Length: 365
Image (tube, rainbow, N blue to C red; front, side, top):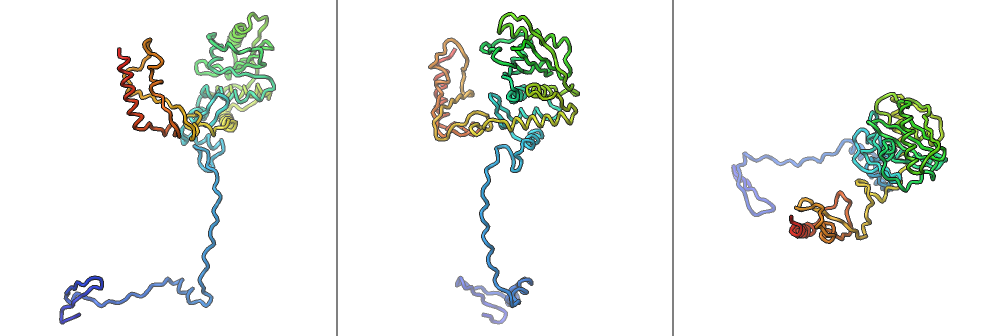
């Protein structure tokens, strides 16, 4: 209601009224509805009609999850190796061949310009044993180096005459060489990537002869020689060349390969791809620690050792079997999480503190 200069304003929602000066009021003009120009053209067309709704998109079949540690579309071994070599891949297990397990850090030693670790040398030679028509056995790098040094302790159960070929790599002063023994033929072969000298061949003869004599007693005849092969051209590819020569020696293929930088890098990629492709089944292994995963529906024994609350933890004569930490802290658990996720519940920690307190009091000096 307007009276002179004053207007009474009322709200439809509340009974409250407000008085205002009419000079402060403006005429209300209802805005015109805005329609886009394109819609106006369509609406005025005699052929215009509501467009049917788009057909529902059929659900795409879900593809299996890529292997842990890889990205979609990067499942080829060569692509995996490139990610590992450039430091873009986390630490997980990639391969298991026999007793040997290959993690990201192991495969990183195959990168261009790097020296091979013993784990790579052992697992690769082990993987090529089946290429030979003869019965072959690998002697790992630790044992073969001990044979070379004459300090071997162990291998008592090995019957050397059971095998046609005993092969393994020696690492001395950061340099890899290869030794292959043919016990039934009374000979050995020594390979040095830089080229075997007469002194090294004699050393190989004496070491391998002593090893066989220890296993069989006196020997009437034992020979050692080397074979022609491409020579190492740099300071880091000795392990790669040893693995490649072992492969060709066992397969019987010609001893020919490229030792240029490009050729060695190609061999590195081939070796890494073979190790990944020839792996045993990894589905039952934890990809982070490489140990067997426990079934989610089966109880397992889990040993908890809380070192930070143990005041006394050393071996001595007074410790009995029933007083050790292992027997105190055995816990039955079900639905065990992967090793990197598991955290002991609060009641377990509380009980362990009580038990370790009892242990410390019982074994005070």
